[in-house]
Image (tube, rainbow, N blue to C red; front, side, top):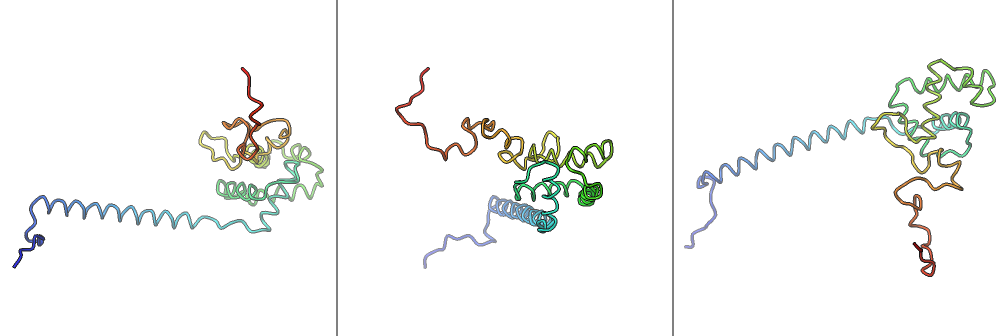
Length: 188
């Protein structure tokens, strides 16, 4: 009869035992991280659901008044709304107060609103919304999250005569345009 070379658990050497112990403990560490990431995923899933259409429309309506631009990007609006509501629990009620002030005083433009609430906490909220649309960020910290770059309003006004500053010297999506013809080489 041929002898089987497989080791049974009782025949393990000290090296084999320590290797099994190492892999068993490594498995425990991996399982711990996996369960921890599951908890993180659950926490991320517990964040607020996407904004309902009525709330988003109200925010966009107010944003149109504050920025003076009628064609605002809806997707960017939803991102900004979510960011503002995550930064401040009272943001939704502050937006309602601003909308009520505009309606009650029949304000014609943002300059009239600015004059009315100058020096009040609502002025900071108004400026944060305007800043969010124009700069594409909702705070001015060093590690601010960028919600818009190409679609930020500061680049929309001069878009016909200015290339958006970027490392792609021909602007965003430069690769979609036709390259210059070969017969027109640059001269130095």
